[in-house]
Length: 206
Length: 99
Image (cartoon, rainbow over all chains, first blue to last red; front, side, top):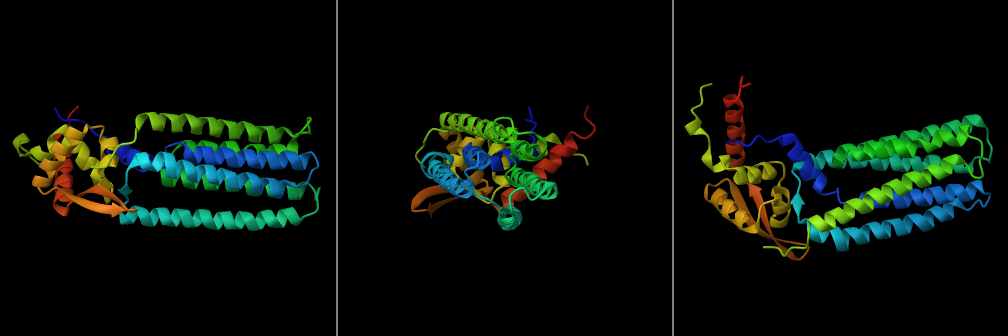
């Protein structure tokens, strides 16, 4: 009997196997926790958000690389992508890097604006971060073939407009939304990582 | 196109070997561990079927050092790629109009 095979699904499974181990979700969750914390401190009037972001982003990347080098990569094996796919991934990575650099420049510009610069400035900042979240996460979802990253992009974008239109309830409701999104991503990343470790025990090479 | 069923490539037609061919088709190469994970075969099955595919000239097996660790890499040969594409075309024609 002939086995009907869905080639598109197999292709997607192969490519996502490289990245679908939960480590990117954990990195994103930790990064968002740092972002939420820095925004919370800014809302509470401490004004040291940039330092907090740096102190939380660096450990997030340390955790991410440690998980990759010591936990997931030894279990995955080695796969080399065809040249055509490498070129398209390089193009997508270039677009992401360009967008990140633009975001850094824009972030610097907006941070130099005086506080309470007006509704137009707040809307511009929010629109920029909304577009950035959706674009970066969508590019990652498309190139890594991991659909839930599209959802992450939307979840990350949602709190930004709330910062303009909600009244401060103890602390700004949008700050708590960052924490909720961060916890969702962290939780999902940990679940995926545990599942990955259970399903892929360490094996000696042939 | 009239394709006698007897002309279907029996080397590829076996489910385990087809899994291996399909998996290797989308990549430049992959090592034994990655191939094992993707195909859900046992080590014994993988060894048996990759030997048959190698004997048919459809795949090549190379030992490589990657980051100072030895890896057994599997890749489709040109002949294997052509054979797989011919096989998928024949199977599509075989089931054309089948409801």
